[in-house]
Length: 175
Image (spheres, rainbow, N blue to C red):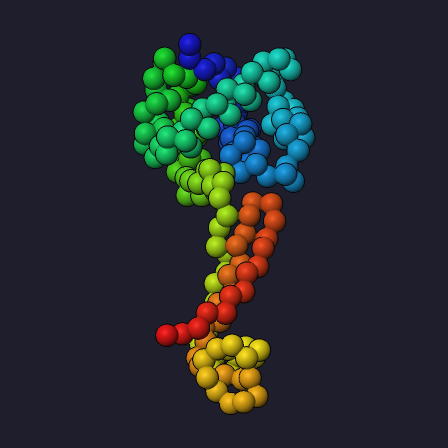
């Protein structure tokens, strides 16, 4: 069954609806209030609340499908012409394609970030240090004072989780 995107929006308000759906659905921007966006986009519309909700949900489905499949704006335009996928006026399909062309890179980044569940290396630095092999007697030779002059690699890695940040510092002897 095709997604029905029947609406009475002009090009400008349709473009605003696209931007709003993209911010709330794709980018998951917590600062955007969907109800405020909907009321702004549909303030001159004669559509009922049920029709507006169905339109908004349908637009979200189309955008999520296009993002997950990684469509270019040309591929999106081709799919928007398919009556078994979506029902959308041609002039709004063109606006959708133009919007997609401008936002495709950001949409791909947000989609990729949303599919990353593992930790990510957010910062990595290293250096070789001759004097910080650590005291305490066991180790690579040096004076009687427990110090060592064996080169040592110092690594600092910040591993970012989607929720928290952890920092790991390692001392590794250089061979």
